Length: 286
Length: 251
Image (tube, rainbow over all chains, first blue to last red):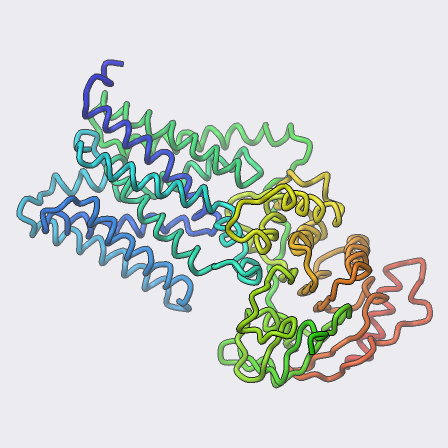
């Protein structure tokens, strides 16, 4: 493993590890709430934050955190208040974030096309020593929230109406989850890139639930898959010179296919079949 | 009025542009079992959702345990069973995980203690689902799923149980199991307010029935009379009889 002798590679693998843990952990709650697409939206908006960092010549991590948190809070407010035109408002936010980012990065003094690509699809060689402490701090925040409040976030994502009647601070928890998702995106942007970060929030969870029947297990298996694909994808990118985002996401899709193929026979062997038969009809309140 | 556990007074509410409740009065005393009946669209679900603060009143007032609803904070005293929906999340969850969510009303932000885990286990036991506690709720039948939602409400050890159509989509045998669970709660002194489409196996438990029609109280008093043969050995025929009486009574 000569690749571990390179400092840049040590940093890249550490970045991948942080992403592999945090993205599926937050993603489990987003998928639970059928908001798998939220990571994508935040990724688009975060690009404006990265570009602002270049324009102002400060660390893009912090500007990305600021802008993506604002974007995520905006999305959550649109979700909770928004009625008919909520989807259009969200789409506008996505397009605005992406085009704003491209515009600003080209106006910035040292912005260039190359910079843009490393943030969109990840890059193993550009995780700088200064990037590491904020990434660790942000990842720690994410884990503290999703593990410390997992019961409460589960209750809110599973049945918001019931959680409200139980007296849980539903709005605060929803906003906290949105902020946590935004922070995760900025942790992930160096390793997998802003356009592919959402995949690492969703695909490991989708793979995990092929073989699990509980929420806690799904979370644990998704994180295990996330770490595995993030590290192996980063190593692959070292040997074959491609952006790590592409190899990490393709690796996670391979795991998904593997688990899906294995789940069929596995399910038949288990005593109680029909895990996913739904079986519940929608009813309108009268 | 501390003996009134839940009260709506002159309550009006709208869903979107449509006014659903037109000044209804509804009070449930401690230990009472009250059924809210009515046709689809009569406002019975909206009424119970207003009673737990999920629908804002446009006029009138709302009280829980003698406290104005807006200032009520003792949510752990209420076990709420919302209407079953497809809202089940995109990630599997076990019976125990779903029921444990009901205990959060008691634990707040502190981690669960042994007593909390025992309360969750007891709630699962009460609805007869102990052998399925580690199974995914997605794998359950409609009746079993409903039992899980009732267990979730019982996990907080409530003084007041509010249920929105707990029998909907549940076959008659399973309805009997649910009725037994509710009977045990009533025997232990729990107050119950429930929305029903028909009385069914719960009929013997009901102290009072409130009939809504077009968002107004059309009747508030003893439950509709049962046929003398309502204890017919064939449960489905008995239910049909009861339903027949109810239909005559409500029309």
